[in-house]
Image (cartoon, rainbow, N blue to C red; front, side):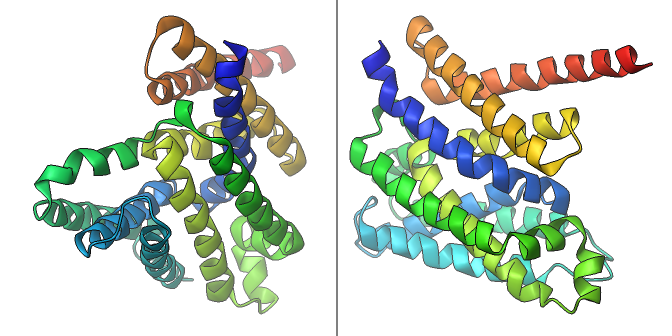
Length: 272
C-alpha cells in the first residue's frame, strides 16, 4: 500500500506547498473563486486547441491553455480598481460563467470526445507518474523562487494595497505578474488533480491556518502541515475504502475545516 501511495502523496505535498501560500494571497485579496475562473479559462483553451486538431495532453495544447490563462490574468489585473463600485469577485464570477458557457458551446463541436475532456478536468492523482512529479516540482519551485525574491511587493499589494499605492508601486503590473504565475500553477495542477481538488488545496489549508494564527509565517507553516497531513489521511481512506481519490481528499479537507473551527472556539473559550 505504501508503494502505491508514494507518488500520489508526493504530488499532494507539491500541491500543498505552492497552493497553501497562494491561498493566503487569494483570501487576503478577497478573490476566492479566481482559482475556478482561471481553471475554467485554461480548460477552454484546451478545448479550443483540441478543436484545432491538437492532442489534449500535448505540449501545444498546454501552451494554448496557458495563453488563455494569460488573457484571464490580464483581465483580473485590470479590474482591480482603487475605488470599487463593484466587487472584483463579481467580475471573476462573470468571467467564469462566460468561460464555462463557451466551453459548452465548443464541446458541441466534439461530442464524442467529451469524456476525454471531462477526464482532463477531473484529473486522477492516484495514477500520477514520476515524470509529472519532476515537472511539477521544477515548475512550482521556479514560481516559488520568483515569489520569494519579490515577496515584499506581492505581500504588500495583497495585504496592504493602500500602502503599496503610497509607495508608488505599479499595482496593475504586479497584479498581472501574480495572476500569470498563479495561472501557470492552476493550469498545471488541474490537469493532474482536477478542479475541485486544486480549489481545496488553495483555500482549505490557508483558511484553516488563518483561523488559528494572525502571523504570516505561522500561517504558512500551519497551512503546509495541515495540508500534508490531510492529504495523507485522504489518500489512505481512498485506498482502504476504495473511494475516488480526489473526492475523498476534498471531503477530508471539509472535515479539517470543521475540526479547526471547533478548535478555534475552544481556544477562545480557554483564553476567556
